[in-house]
Image (cartoon, rainbow, N blue to C red; front, side):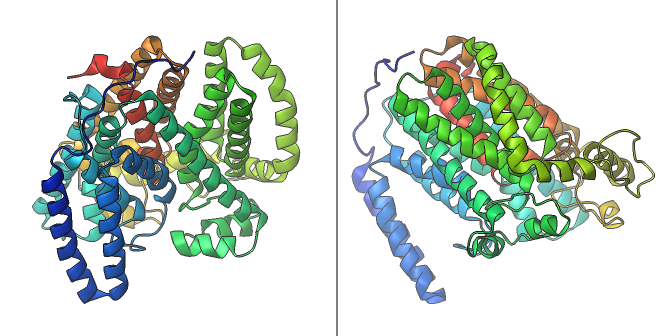
Amino acid sequence: MAYALPEPALAPALRRPTATIVAITVAGASAVGGAVALQPLAGLLGVVAIAAALALVQRPHVAVYLMVTLAPATAGLSRGLLVPGLRVSEVLIAGLATLVLLFAPRARPLPWTRVELLLLAYAALTAGLGGLDLALRHAPLTGSELGALLGPFQFVLLLRATVVALPRERQRLRAAQLLLGAATVVCLTGLMQLANVGPTRSVLSHLTGSHLYSASVSEGVPRVTGPFNFWHELDGFLMPSLLLAFALLLGARTPRARLGYAVVLAVTGTTLLATATVGPLVATVLACLYVAWKRGVLHVVLAAAIPVVLIAAIALGGTLTGRAKQQYTASASSYRLPLVPETLSFRYAVFREQSAPALRGRWATGYGPDLPPEFALGNFPYTETVYVTMLLRGGVPLLTVFVLLLLVTARAARRAQHSARTDLQWSIATVVLAMTSAYILLQLIESYLLDSGPPHTYWSFVALMLGAGAGRADAG
């Protein structure tokens, strides 16, 4: 397929140029004044932010390029690195998306799709029901709880700003390429962590506040985390980009394009293997086989995979073997399932020992953004599944809307795949369909779309799919 669609006309640079410049200058000056009073460095950053806002407001597509490139890649960094209490990704999305939505030009009104409306409903229910639970329990609202309550709204902003600011096919292609570039950089940091290059390990531990990689090394099975808190965040971040690189590689028409996508695929594939996570690896392999089947080259891909598997087995055989041994190490739980890998058996034990008791009497509105006291009785304060987390945060209503959101997104991706008019549209729609299907199952054992990194990447791809117009059949 060729990128030969008619380009939509663009509106003037600003919808309200005078009001825009005055608003940014006045608001920025006030913010800088307050920041200087607190800390000179904060004031300097404020001045830089104002200058960037004045430049980006006339180029909303550049603002979205920065957002989809940097926000997913920095989502795992510790809170407070730039703004107290906030992650770098949250600052980027809130600032850049708000800038785009308030001042970006629009040639025509864009109706909200069912996916966007359901994402908004999910965010509103998370905040409303969770806040109600806290109020009924007279529990304090801490920064952690506030982040859990308001977190989904950042994806509403990301999705809507991307749809609004990237009306052209070449803009969405550039955004997709930047996403692949960011994933490649993240992978290189992860591989440097594995190879212990310079101060990489200590720097990543400092930036993320996580020491899980060091713990995995001490256990004899090093599992790469990169600039994220743990390996599940990294593999969830990588899977969509790996699939897109694979899909575009199979459809590339020039040697240069094929080489570029092959490099991205090799780096992301190696890093995904280095996380030694079974579920995502199996899901990614199945998704790649699905893409190859839809492309009509499944036999070629299977033949080419043989040397790749051999090389991977030689390079990472120790890690994968050690991980396999861990999967059949007996646990202390009385709920261990015989002949079942530890990954699944452990999560079953967590559900029986902690989650099931915590859910009793809390099906209607849940418990809130924090965990019930039942989780304090054990030594593992996590639900390990997104579905239990949804029930605890907002009961059956929140879980219903969340599942409906995934199903409607998968339906929109299926329609977009069938109606795609370019190779890019088909590839992105196929990635969204494959990833949504994978997450529905994988989130039985991990809260991928509540973690830092995976949801940022996932909703960026959904936004590119909806922005292409192929998903406009779902406009509500």
